[in-house]
Length: 473
Ligand code: HEM
Image 1: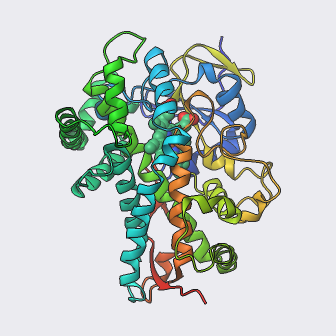
Image 2: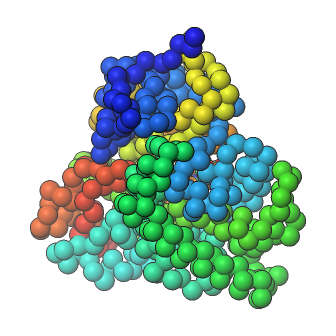
Image 3: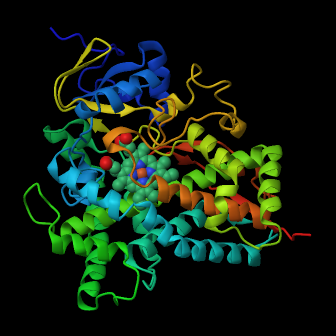
């Protein structure tokens, strides 16, 4: 006689699937206003718990984190992660624990983020240079695309080394992978029913997934093979390929089984799919918010320019002085967490939240978007106001459940340091080097807040702005 959490009535077969809508973070937020912050839906055949308040998030991500720290076996991720050999999609267990632990200390460590600072600086400098030559052209630059290229190139260098010859065609494959992972997969809602599998064949999803996977696999294997035949010179700094090959040599796994090229390729996949979209989208939302609030833009630019004087660029070592920039980024992540519903989790055992029974293998969505706009935690929650962080200790490192853009608990994003470093350096230089104007055409679209949702919520219309070179006096 389980007492299940409340939820809306469901239709036969599809359950509540029709209520997800095009922007699930918004539809689920509305539904939770009627049914509560701990709400149970039936999405196709899958019971899905939706968490929408800071208190409920604390239960799932802290108190009962050990019960909610697995991931569901989803269709797209299964293929792209070499059958869940990565960090983001591996079920909770010895393999995930070992790999995450080693990657947190070797791949995502503060030391490595700092060591890769020079490559990020070079990539940002190249972007700024290219904008200088197109400055003041009336159509402007497509910042959405340029920021994605920037994060793509930064991840390539981080993963494959400084001398890696970047293949720009592969950037499209990462975008395709993100689109496929965000697309509707019948098998995710009707697992073990042939209708789900049939849908994925009919919609063409499987064919696209296969093609995308083959492209990745070929590239990743090429990088590994090249490194095996011509290892890094001992004098050169280790890159992530070296680290992962060292893990293969040392056989880091304690959970049984070998650590092979497949494991390395699965982790490469996480770096690209997890590391490229979210930072780029965050920077684009920040620029959009700033264009809509010229006084905030001006205040930020003045602070950056006062501190930097006529230095010509902002370097990573300067970022600690730019407090207001940090508030702007925090505020952007509050209103526009790119992974609005985090990454789906799955309950392991039978447990209870707020007196409700949660059965094993329930899918769990934590609505970070709704939580960041909760009126009980945030004054005037819909307003973009970076000042709110000035006298507040709330941050995104997983201790404050009213603000969880990177998740929290065992599954928290390991790429926080790297992601924030990419966003800060890009924004600081964009705002130091240029003033920004709306293009003469499509003004409305440029600053529209319309969204599209997939694994990442991004702007529906690309952000196109005109850079006007700033010359220090
Ligand atoms: C603005 C930047 C970023 C945001 C907002 C973000 C957000 C997130 C979120 C919400 C999760 C799920 C956490 C949970 O389930 O509690 C996550 C997981 C993850 N992220 Fe990030 N992320 C960002 C940057 C990065 C970067 C740069 C990388 C790597 C290069 C990365 C790699 C990962 C990985 C591997 C996981 C899976 C962790 C696990 O399952 O244990 N992320 N991220």
